[in-house]
Picture 1 (cartoon, helix red, strand yellow):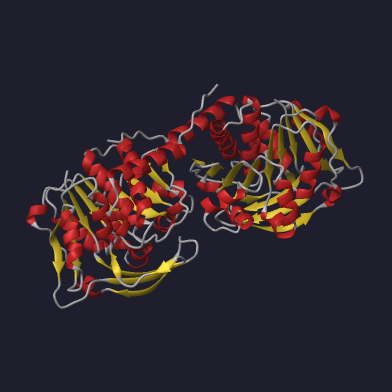
Picture 2 (picture 1 turned 180 degrees about the vertical axis):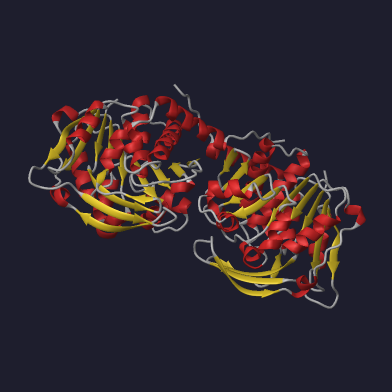
Length: 307
Length: 307
């Protein structure tokens, strides 16, 4: 089944304890597209870039079945730019520069050729824009997955809540789940968020894995203990891309299949962090993905006999 | 197989965001004894108490097959006392009072009747005392499990390293693993610690679960997402008690059985945090333990077909 991915295509400059980059390609929709294209094609991309976004990156995406008709190119402006520096624990970072550039005018129009897609990934963006996208889709996709962040909770909570009501799956981290719900206990937070629209909630905990909540059910997916996390930028988007890509490939949105999709997303994210930017996502082989998934299986498998 | 448990039997006064206690019974060996006695009896207890330790607590322990011959009772002194206050996240706490009392003179003597025990649990104590205990055991137990904490790393690192060389399994949390190894990456820290004596390393991550390392193998055990953690005091000791109790019951110290033992320990710890002190550990039923273990099985189980 086909997939629409909405989000930023941008430049990042990243500093981690292991090194530092100049301006490299980034953006939530870029990561989602690379990760999901391993499982489903075409990926219908919706984004906005300036005149500086590299043609070779566009070609690379096209070669992976990513449709770019929904990517607006603004000839006299620059692409969105973010610069940040990670702390030693890699779980926290400081934003050094945010230049909105073309993103200030982002007013996505969904091409007719995208209509009928069954899966929609709303990357982290202004919730008003996320809602505009949903409103343009007819028929409504079978599954709408929304990513967001604390920034929007701080400045646009009412709008975020409105968009949330229209979605099926929400992706947030633990502190965002607490902020959104006003509950400190993650279990209570999840229960409350599941009354706010989404029927499924994924709480990402970085190196501590992820939790999937649905009705009274909960699933815990570990993160692989990695020797080194080189650059966490895009890991969450890559997770989202692997997750929705696998769901789209299998066209099965049951709780059981979502558990598997989370493992697939986690495996893809574990590749992403091995190099700066989306580089590693461009040369992963099918065998490597299967091997990484097997590591997850081994990591949590145990036999127990209740006697 | 029989088990020796060495550690404190003490009083705690605890304040959490949910409430506050006066002096209640606590101590690492108390928690280990309650948790392990569900799986193995007798538990040969080694500790020291003052004239104030309640006779009814001693009787309660005896009724569960906990041998107290190795518990020295000092008639003219008081038991060890600790008082602390947990922060909202329950992962960190401030120590308000530490009264060593009898613990200042703890010089454990292992009763002859304890000799020949196959399993030894060294609760968190001065590493010099832990080493004294090992030296008194002849034959050496089949498995020596050592708990410790950052406090001893700060003030007695050389002695701690000496004791560590004599053990088989080390239990620490993630920040202690980093401090002990000087490595920030948990995987690198584990690799280094496994050259320092123990063949198995368990890194406890509280609400984020636990990791077991052995040679090139790693196992991840989740923690149950609990609605409320009422009082985390003793959770680590209860985990240790369930872990070594299950190993002693099954008399199997393979990596595979240790994985199961970690799930059992995690299940016991999940009961401990439901009430203040060891209270909840006194009335857990076999059915409840099995039910809790099944929750762990369900929490992490997923089906995946590599295609």
